[in-house]
Length: 81
Image 1 (tube, rainbow, N blue to C red):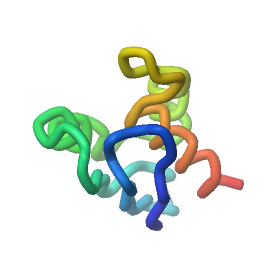
Image 2: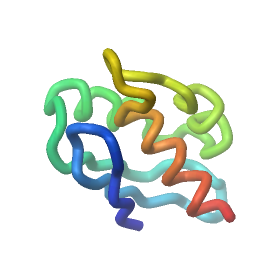
Image 3: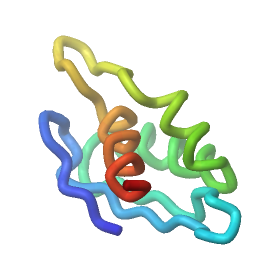
């Protein structure tokens, strides 16, 4: 799924979920902080979707009310619904 972000440096998040196990298979951020996005993407592979949402939802970046991790949580919630 491709999710268009809002209020962050990354312009979109592309992710794939293993629907049999409800775990993250892949995550790719377009734009944003390359090292942080790459590291986060690697850490999330194999994690249950609900756990990722729980850990990342509400994370902010500097003065912004959201962040790339928070946007991923929003994307996963949208995918789940």
